[in-house]
Image (tube, rainbow, N blue to C red; front, top):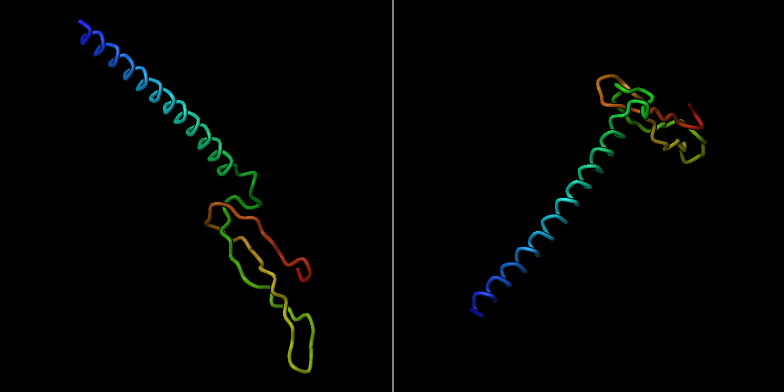
Length: 98
């Protein structure tokens, strides 16, 4: 009789521990999905882009900033120009040379 009671008690403890961890994981899964959905809504928001259908084209400004006897100094600012066919782009022109 004691052996049966002990086995039933052990089974109850194991099942309650399993239920606790399962429900905790389900709650984490729900929170993870909510976070992923919230982040994807932000990424798909077209108001974040100057050109929602723009594809970035990056190059260095390269304008001459100074002339010296050993050569010219050039602007090293990375310029981004948006062309069509992308998922979104914000243009960034050189602040000194346009």
